[in-house]
Amino acid sequence: MRTTFLPFALPDIDDAELAAIKEVLESGWVTTGHKTQQFEREFAAMVGAKHAIAVNSCTAAMHLALEAIGLQRGDEVITTPYTFAATTEVVRYFDARPVLVDVDARCLNIDPAQIEAAITPRTRAIIPVHIAGLPAELDAIHALARQHNLVVIEDAAHAFPASYKGQSIGSLSDFTCFSFYATKTITTGEGGMICTDNEAWAERCRIMALHGISRDAWKRYSAEGSWFYEIVAPGYKYNLTDIASAMGLAQLHKAERMWERRRAIAEQYNDAFQPLRELEIPHNRSDSQHAWHLYTLRLHLDRLSIDRAAFVEALREQQIGASVHFIPLHLHPYYRTTYG
Ligand SMILES: Cc1ncc(COP(=O)(O)O)c(C=O)c1O
Image (cartoon, rainbow, N blue to C red):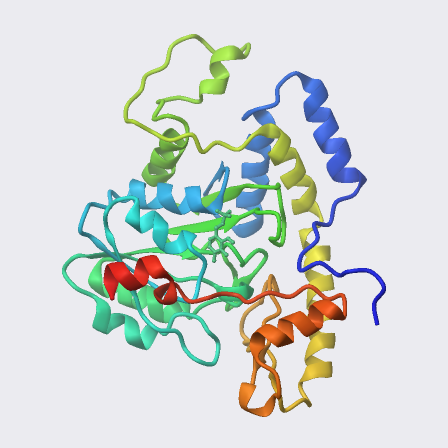
């Protein structure tokens, strides 16, 4: 038995992050600036996107993407119930309607076969979620989107680094939104990134991420800047700081190594759990790269003498942190009472 507690998630932080943050702290410029621009450039290059806009969460990223496409009250956005609160709350920010279609029971990602039946004249977008880091069936989703003129916004909070049929997640849809929350595969404490190839949408996201101001405000105070700026819309305060971006760059530089380690651990778990009738190991696909953000075991409760809560508790007693990802959205009081 372990003698120390193994937390559900631990950030991998070493001298590189400490040195990078120290450099920013000593530079005299601690909020959004050159480091954030560098983080955006390197991230965009890594995932193969034309534009990457750093923001302070994936929630902010998805909010800005929906704002950029002009989502209106009463519009509908199709997504999966098997996700975190953020995926649908951003739709509610517009008084628009999240339409939940079921997942494919094997891979737990949204089932493209069920999307079409949910499309109405009010549907504007589809938000597939790459649950646990396993890429969703993007070809089928893109085909539906093209056919019905819908925008695809990937919730890739779990999916860095990941790829779908050889192409990086981040390079494939109208928008891809990433999370750098504390438990994610790379972290800036809190943070996120919007990736898009569309120049106009990228510009709108940049403007709305910083108060609707029409040029990078930070330049106002730097040698290359001037005092002039214009507010073109009532924007938000979603910018990422240079402190966070410096940490993000250090994390980005070791993302591949950290992924290799997660993959090796997942393989070890698979080997260990596959023979057990009580457990079902996570689905994987041979044509794509799983980010292995989460390792999700399904319990065959009919073959177990304890329930799920007791299982998680028993792991805790063995000093192993585990959690339930996720309680589907339609089972939560807000979605139950609002949408039946
Ligand atoms: C699937 C999914 N989408 C979005 C988010 C939101 O990310 P953030 O905390 O960066 O806003 C999370 C966070 O856990 C998530 O799991």
